[in-house]
Image 1 (spheres, rainbow over the protein chains, first blue to last red):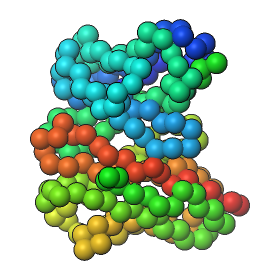
Image 2 (image 1 turned 90 degrees about the horizontal axis):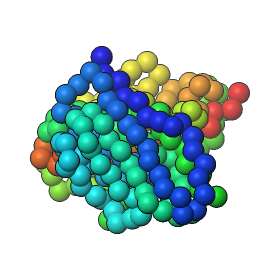
Image 3 (image 1 turned 90 degrees about the vertical axis):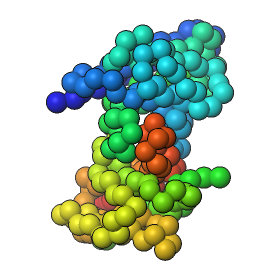
Length: 113
Length: 116
């Protein structure tokens, strides 16, 4: 069966520090991968998606970047965090061209001080 | 424009009451898919149901039921005899045609509080 792992679960970082959140998927090949952010009390905003290794599409301009160095690995990064980067970050995987449900990781709660 | 609207920000009910969560969507595609997810306090999103645009039959799964009406672009979710464990944020989502990389458009969510 397929599983998705995200880490760390919680993170507290000072303003201006770098960020690296990692997401890995097991049990499936060539998945579509997605990064979402959920600000406090708000809905899910799609940040990035990837349909293959090295292929990244950005949905909103921001202080963050994403990379997909391996088929089942998706990384969310920042060189310098802003206060507005605080939130709950969720990684998800899906099957391309299928309209099947996306499956989500447990999320990372990021607090910027 | 918002593709998925969940106008109810927060709902509070007493255990055993029925509650309906509203979802209105907007799309120009004739083929699309609608989803409901549950987000308990722990944070992970749990998939509940998927419905395609050609199937307007209502669906029932235990205490959960879904009412899909294309005429009003709505896909409402009803919980019958609510329980405290139903307390969560519920999200409605839309996925459009097959060649859209399976991107989802989520509503802003409805927080359901079920009190004992």
